[in-house]
Image 1 (cartoon, rainbow, N blue to C red):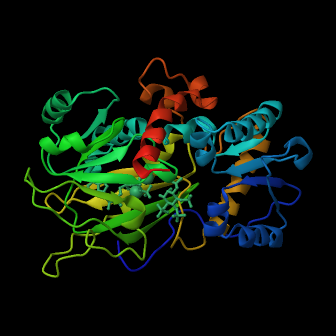
Image 2: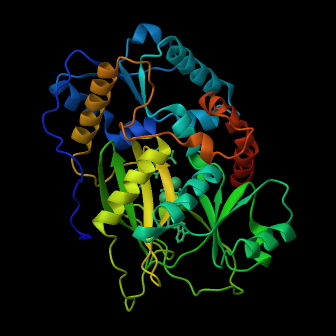
Image 3: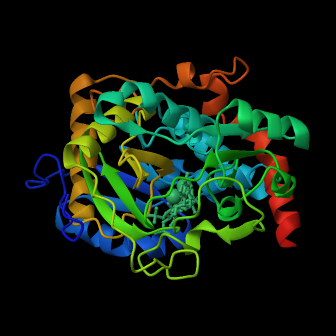
Length: 391
Ligand SMILES: Nc1ncnc2c1ncn2[C@@H]1O[C@H](COP(=O)(O)OP(=O)(O)OP(=O)(O)O)[C@@H](O)[C@H]1O
Ligand SMILES: O=P(O)(O)O[C@H]1[C@H](OP(=O)(O)O)[C@@H](OP(=O)(O)O)[C@@H](O)[C@@H](O)[C@@H]1OP(=O)(O)O
Ligand SMILES: [Mg+2]
Ligand SMILES: [Mg+2]
């Protein structure tokens, strides 16, 4: 794939027409600004589609009816654990959804909730090692570290699971303000610096180049971003490096952590066919239509390595994002109307939600995910992160 050219893959976005349908939309203020929601609303209006901003502080009934709701409720779900106002917003949303089973959610809450938990997303990524082996697609060895795990048991588990130093440590909660504080660990002793629950992943040298794969329904594109530079493999005495992930892989990111050695040989770009196979597999595994995948190329093996999966990402650099999104909304509603059934899936026909199988813990049922009860276990992580940041 040519690094400089960004191409949208998938059926043509032309011919968007959807008169008489109403789209509700809930996004955080930050997301509204980043996405330029007002411009999207105008774009939709130009194509005969009404998009209405939902106010979660007011009953949704009078704001509706909605044929479909576009949302990124991840922040509210995470906040709801320690903030009763956010819980009320979520309850308000849930009561509308329960009373209107015909309203399509883009994306469905249970599917989205899986990606809030890096324990679950790491399992999804690990499955790619077997399902996409023929494409030489893999994910780094990963370890779930639970609250209460002591240092020596963590050190033993790192060795047992075949993780290699350096390690990257990520919070269990994958989205929201406190989820992007990470660290790089260079020795077994430095594992004392981590704050469970969290995941440990082997750090894979990749020439400081990351590819963001943005997915909108049956279309996707791949854009190049800066990333963390290479480190010598194996343990060493170096001190733990703490960093905020939002500062390393944005288009404008430029820091000591991402600065590249000019003598370094660039790794090859990912093949378009492999990326397409990855997107197809993840659409089916996740039961989602709006997600992003971060991939890197291992400089030693050239394997396409999946390191992160995100709910409704920024799509910065995706050409024709607005028309792809509107086109997807139209196609979901057309299929929904044709089926005439009470489905809440916002994903394409080939999508099969395998969440129950992947969330192997018997205590986490699909129903728990829908009602977001399992997020309860995240509460202390968020509080811990807040303590660390003194907020
Ligand atoms: N296993 C890994 N090997 C090498 N580099 C990694 C690995 N995991 C993460 N990174 C680097 O750290 C950065 C942040 O990691 P990650 O993408 O998991 O964080 P995040 O907070 O979930 O990011 P996002 O803002 O995309 O949600 C990546 O952009 C990449 O530069
Ligand atoms: O707005 P941005 O472009 O920074 O988008 C980022 C998005 O923030 P927003 O959705 O709240 O805006 C993040 O969501 P939260 O973890 O904060 O929930 C996360 O999905 C990142 O992966 C996105 O960065 P990208 O992967 O696209 O570079
Ligand atoms: Mg990422
Ligand atoms: Mg992420």
